[in-house]
Image (cartoon, rainbow, N blue to C red; front, side, top):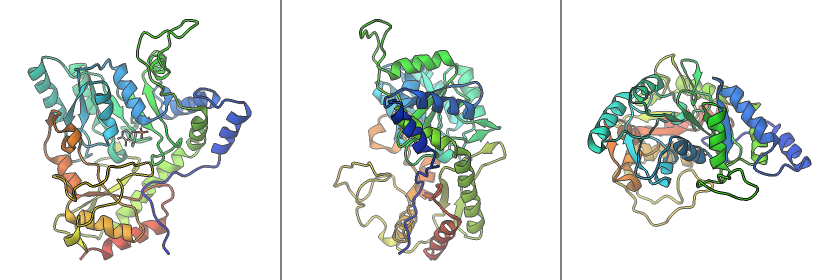
Amino acid sequence: MQKRIYLCLAHMSGEEQKFIQEAFDTNWVVPLGPNVNGFEADLEAFVGEGKSVVALSAGTAAVHLALIGCGVQAGDEVICQSFTFCASANPIKYLGATPVFVDSEPETWNMSPELLAEAIEDRIAKTGRKPKAIVPVYLYGMPAKIDEIMAVAEKYDIPVVEDAAEGFGSRFDGRVCGTFGCYGVLSFNGNKMITTSGGGALVCPDEEHKRDIMFYATQAREAYPYYQHEHIGYNYRMSNICAGIGRGQMTVADEHIAHHKHVCALYKELLSDVEGITLHENPSPRFDSNYWLCTILLDEQLHVRGEEHAYCQAVQGAVGGAAGVTHGGGALHTECEPNPNVEAMRVALDEAGIEARSLWKPMHRQPIYADAPAYVNGVSEALFARGMCLPSGPCVTDDDVRYIVEQIKCNII
Ligand SMILES: *Cc1c(COP(=O)(O)O)cnc(C)c1O
């Protein structure tokens, strides 16, 4: 029986338990303490640029607090990359603000700087007000054209919140992603580049912003000998136990990133003679993706075994999820879905013990955001129709990659 090969499973260094044991031994089993401080110091050293980092309970919490840090309030508009996971956009709604979605450019698959400028101009013309923040994303780890995005943001003086949840350790022009904008979002969920079981962090410009974010992350308690609240706060701080896992993970972060890049290079080599399949790669040496997930595009003309039966059967449960609690009983199709050859390849790989996944469905095609303004060029929708993610994590061996490519090849007809 072939073992199952997952997209990106967590992989422990062995150091984690030492830090956790220390937390128990010193009775620091709370959402503050030496591991939290130590993990933040590790992250600050890792991202560089003199940034300050706050450890939080999730990447989603980091997006939420970054928007609060940018002054986003109910009724405001926030520009967000459409081609992303829902956690980039949902916190905009938590605040009662409106997301304005911007499509991608085809080279990095991330926010199009041209379309961003167009969107800002049009929002000002239509509403008389500037959007309050811009949220570009490093999808699958690929750096965005962040220099051009920053130039547009600076022209209009709008703060940027980089969603680097998938781009931990990716670089643009040698600089770590998440350090270009006002805030940078990191995630340490179970399937990310490094994990704290669940957790995230916010990269802040300086200590003053860090203190402000920490204030909101700890229920916004004012300086009195009793609970005094003058702002709405949140319970978003990372626990000292999770931070212990994070400190252990930081000892292997560089190894993990190197392994993801190695896996991508091996896919490139083995897929080079397969017609109709294109691996997504750094568009130029200025881009240095961590290749968190290796992704491919399938030509529409590529025929895959079983494609005539794609979508005939409902899937059990949702994508992405150990913790996925789903609603049952949906239709077999939606108005926007991957091509039949992509779905057939996913099913064929699944039967061969390989977890593959379609690309993230653009937010402007999600029912929850049907009414949100969107500036689109067709790029993210076309990618969603043709793309798929392949296993890329630290547990994926060279033999696994060879087996996966073999299975891809033998299902092409
Ligand atoms: C995972 C992810 C997040 C959220 O991080 P959590 O730690 O899971 O809350 C945000 N944005 C993107 C693009 C992600 O992939």
